[in-house]
Length: 230
Image (cartoon, rainbow, N blue to C red; front, side):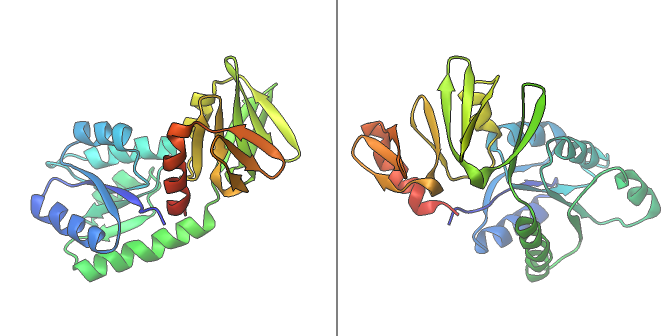
């Protein structure tokens, strides 16, 4: 099973190190630690975390809340880290949507307990959905129902049994919107849902009766992806 990827935004090195050690002991990958807003935004774009732990006040400013608002825009889940529960602090966060609050100081056991209960509930309740427009309609397609994406010039077909939907975006752009770790590019013209693969040959992939080209160079990577998908 693929590890979850967390980003820590915390300017106290002792606290950030404690959080990092706690997460890694519980099989979570820490993709980075940011001590200010600028680094946090850079790591967010580069590392694509699954969840963020955000200190509300960085160097005395409410920069954590500025960052949280960016996370709300892209619907990326996060917890606040805070040592304050006073009315001023609470009023600052009223317009944001955290999964919860982790109040400092905390023990390693208490920290993980607080995170894991809420995070697992979030994962259980959330279904990854691809929201995309085509011909004036907004389609909300559960990722689990997607068979594969197929490039068509500067457009892309989304194949969902028993139909396909043509959308005015490139395959690359549509692929970047997918949240699941079970999609793979076996050939430059395709992106397949590896959970739908029924057979892997030397140069082809089968999704039941559908045959898709497979680059020999990418075959070892595909086999590794299949071993590690959720």
